[in-house]
Image 1: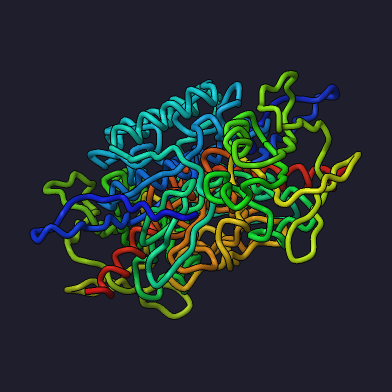
Image 2 (image 1 turned 180 degrees about the vertical axis):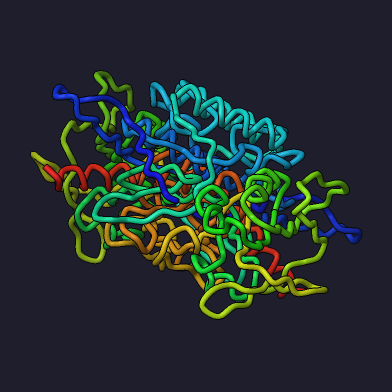
Amino acid sequence: MIVLKYTLYGYNNIGVKLRMIYDCAVIGAGPAGLSAAINLAQTNRSVVVFTTKEEDSSIYRAPEVNNYLGFHGVSGKELLQAFYDHAKKMGIEIVHKKVINFYKSGDIFTINANNEFYEAYSVILAIGTPKKTLLENEAEFVGRGISYCAVCDGMLYKGRTIAVIGEAIEAEEEAEYLSELAKKLYYVPLYKKNEFHFKDNVEVILSRPKSVYGEDFVNALELEDRILNVDGIFIIRKTMPADQLIYGLEFTEDGHIKVDSKMQTSIEGLFAAGDCTGRPYQVAKAVGEGQIAGLSASTYVKMVKEKQK
Amino acid sequence: MIVLKYTLYGYNNIGVKLRMIYDCAVIGAGPAGLSAAINLAQTNRSVVVFTTKEEDSSIYRAPEVNNYLGFHGVSGKELLQAFYDHAKKMGIEIVHKKVINFYKSGDIFTINANNEFYEAYSVILAIGTPKKTLLENEAEFVGRGISYCAVCDGMLYKGRTIAVIGEAIEAEEEAEYLSELAKKLYYVPLYKKNEFHFKDNVEVILSRPKSVYGEDFVNALELEDRILNVDGIFIIRKTMPADQLIYGLEFTEDGHIKVDSKMQTSIEGLFAAGDCTGRPYQVAKAVGEGQIAGLSASTYVKMVKEKQK
């Protein structure tokens, strides 16, 4: 079900399409991600930033921020707006897609952004406060009945029974798409809402999901008050938990992404910045780390390209 | 020659003077120091910031800064002004004195700011890019003929022959003061200037200082082209080298102050942030580290005060 869609930037003189490989892909467009992006741009690197929605940054809801030096008495929304204005002035490319996962092959990272594929020499994770997997046993069944992307895996469940767990209202769109493929769909919202308008084959279940069961493959979802027999479970979150994004990423004991003083993770060419690397969960810390990650990625990319010559 | 001048903040009900102990003393008023200060104020801690001159921050001379998120196309001077405005709005106390050194006794740090003494439960070093000692053997002779403070040690050299090495034009004022005490004073400017107006007992030497000689005590200053027999050498710098500020501070191999992820140095209650902890020498990195150091100091002070109850 995977279609490779390379971002193209032109043709060479014999008409062969040239593939665009970004110097860096930044996942997340909060303070850390945007700071990384402007620092990459400042050092003349090509950069793409992925975000589902700008408003997803936790700073967006802060009524007043007084401790980001240079801005006093602003709302989180105003501060984020100033950050976006800055990124815009520097021509930063922002792609509104959710990154499902990515992998590294040779020196190139391939990023699956809602089933469109991008390539980059380096990646910066700026994905905000750590999110744990939702269900007991969830990690064990990834790719064996647990999916995070309707577009990517929906066709695998054509004519079958599935559950869709929606973290936020945006998940309903993916549920609607899946309801056209599935025979029966249980929709489990994790947010509060009174009325749902789905097709007849959708049943809304207002109960907290707990665990997943199966043998080789998922066969049941356990909720607080019942067990649903299903062939697959889609968990639709605003952002993916870091441990599901890429294989081999190391974490600290308290569940943050492990980085060194250059913001380099356990995977070469992969950097992290902001809340995902540890406390305090604060704007200035995130912006500072974003800068270090951006400059480190910039240096790393230079090294990789020189190696390729 | 040391006179203790405690900052006083009032009298208790039997008329005994109460001593003000700051929660934190921040040394340096560049991006890192100011960020630390506003974060301390934000968590309701008393804080004092020491700086010789605001313009000493290396960012002041930057013609354009584009990579501190939220400000685009500003000069270093404008950015620093915005930082000062922020600090002012939060009522940060800034003291225009050079910190000569400080020490820790029990839980209290005592800070010598040009021979006036301040006390604090914690200290944050935000002193900018690392400065090395100037002369060969300099560290060896500190307190034995090498001095960094005219007001502190001038009287020790009454009627004697001294050299004064001035890093910047401000040093001339201290040289003038010392020329009234000394029999003979050699003034060695490290900056460019054509005319000097000193008393008759002052000889200006335009030669690069290299090394210091002596047995128990300093007896000569070696310059590129001559050797001066002196009883003491005053080195008047804008900021002190970190290794002369406090005993026991650990450094990384490349000469930066060693800190952990909380910006804690090798001395409990002493934190560091900004250029002095390592590269990149950039505003956002400094502001981010300042925030972490400020919040860490805040937590530390709470712990110390609870212990004292």
